[in-house]
Length: 166
Image 1 (cartoon, rainbow, N blue to C red):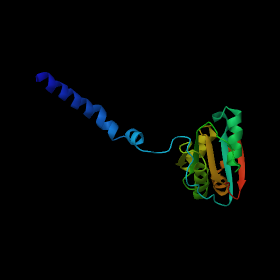
Image 2 (cartoon, helix red, strand yellow):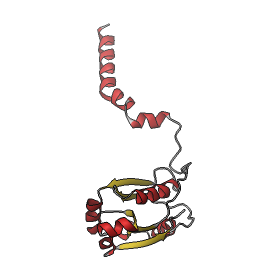
Image 3 (cartoon, helix red, strand yellow):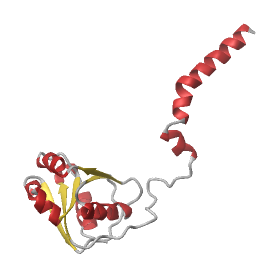
Image 4 (tube, one colour):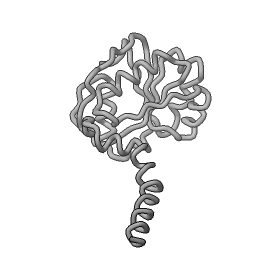
């Protein structure tokens, strides 16, 4: 009887230490929910805003030249086949049009392929000047206001978009 109590006590302790945090985590929810897998396309494509935009792509973040070319095509509004690479796209918090275009791009990719981060424009561009970014999407107006052209020097490709993409 004493051994049974000990086993129950140890099992309960293990559940409190390991099981309870797991059950309350996102991992457990993903395990039991019927969410789409990583190659499932987003179901709702958002509208692209109109205007002029600039997309900065850090070439050093994309060593595979085929993937880099596909990202160029994708951000230029062309249809592309699967791109076997995830990206992080930054937008300026003070640039709602740039953020809307980035959300349009994200909606055209398989779920979770693009992580979208919104940051303070000055901080984002300061990091970008030192090569600490993957992709940046900005309206031309915001890029001009915050000096976004400084990012285009170095190992960066610049794609200019008129009227939105997609």
